[in-house]
Image (tube, rainbow, N blue to C red; front, side, top):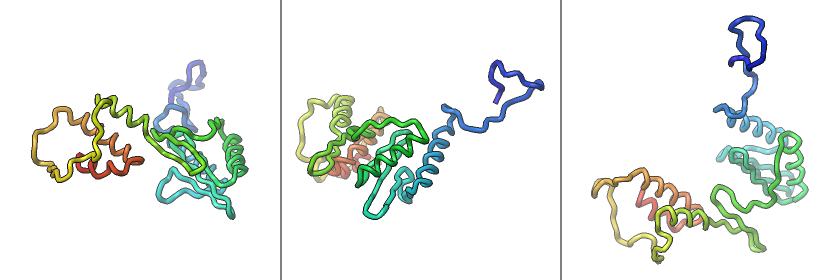
Length: 189
């Protein structure tokens, strides 16, 4: 990299060697992930073999799960004291902000009750309906006509296929909380 303005180089054409990633570089998020992963492993977490964003820690009857998405972290576990210790550890290494109990994460609405955790996508669904001008559409008991057979080689090509693919992708994501949509969306894709 070129020397910063105001830095007096001793030789003409001298450049600086960048020893760490700067915020904004395309590899910065990778560096952040490597740093966080190293620190979590040092603390005793194990990284899931099935999802690199999931870290687990078992100590006797205590269990902690930590999920990372870019710079957002969801933390849950059996003992409040263990969760507090993890937060203190991370706060000692990085500047963190504890937002309390999660209410919304990646388009998923989370609500706790005495019966457990309710996960919905009401706002996400409203956004889909609004974007497709279907807010006032009639409700159907089945989201797909029974007996309808679709093929990929029949019919006219869509004029706005990019919008259709985006719509199908949004419906696939909606399938996290609405598994009844999985088959019809798979047929439409």
